[in-house]
Length: 519
Image 1 (cartoon, rainbow, N blue to C red):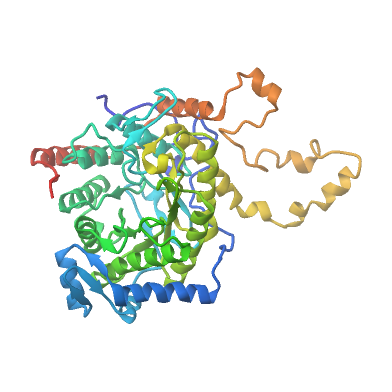
Image 2 (cartoon, rainbow, N blue to C red; image 1 turned 60 degrees about the horizontal axis):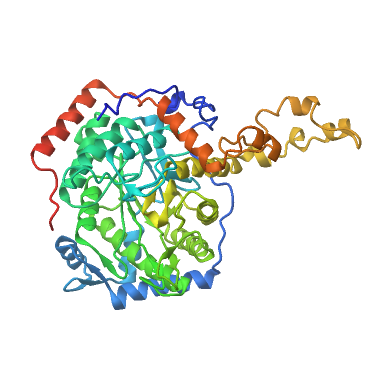
């Protein structure tokens, strides 16, 4: 394939060079870390929070969590937990002591320090879609398996859009690459095509260790520099109900011991892998998440950890997962309350069950994204590009989702609710009086260019003007934007020595066989 690290683009490289206008393709907002200025929505009263907490503690004390990892079982035994085969029961006092070590806020610094992100507090970050095995766009017109080239296209979108703050897992699985070396090629591409914070899958020793070494090489870091603070992160899911598997726990233990960030996200679908009640599903999710976080804090107190939520419901007619539902939104808000109760940063997701980039895709995703805002979420996975319950990655949907994310970021700007005398505008109101208009007055002329959000996908013209310009529907406009971005894209700079060392590492590890695929 062509050298993906050297395509063309104007602008949008290093964060320090980011302007409001990224290129001719998108008039986008500058890079920044949004701060959520709203008070969170809290559907639980104090008694409700205590009830979920007590339920989670009872699960940990009386039922236990299965840990399918021998070293983790030994660590739990040494910590005084009750271990019976693979079942681990742990006392609430010990769990709360361990959670007390976890930082409420921390930074992750990628190879470009200008792209450093802060997780915790009132910050909210948005990331790309991760892990779908399939790809769909309007030009192909059908669902097809993902490839390395398509994955690279999503990485270019991830780098291009300033409202995307970190690069999650593979935006689409490159199924044309053998699983033993896929992580080497895709993380190589990711580190060349983006300078944002990157992710490593916890799928065995080789994969996680390889990615940590690649992040070190790309950043020109010594081992001491790498381990001194987070430069990357991993995200794991529990195997609901009540189970953590071998490979994911192993990867997290390796990250913890080298000071890298960990997100623990149970995937609890109410009515299937969790109780049909949302309170019961959230309680199970909390127990599964904090059991693993407690382990990592015992191994290395202060390990930066995030509690994740992926609690939704199933369609009880078909058993299919549903997303962006009222239940999903409430579960996210409830988990936000519990995250604050435990003093942990929180992860949520942008998601939908729609199969194509249509109205259903956007209202479900919008519900999911706004529930992240309402819950006080700090890091939003799958915020752009997700379809079919996570089975499809779609570039048109990615572009359309970035419009929503930019609107959310604009909504959070304090300038919108400022109340200085100039904002109250009594003098302007007096000048216009009851019979005039505000278009031409000086107060408007000084502010009109930045007064309101300016869309790059939405079309605000009337029907006749829209029709005269070609009556292009939203998804088609997003497709054209996607193609324009690819045509103009240029990878962010990387030191030549680091680039060569990264390629050499990949070549050596592939020659050695990569990672095992049979377990």
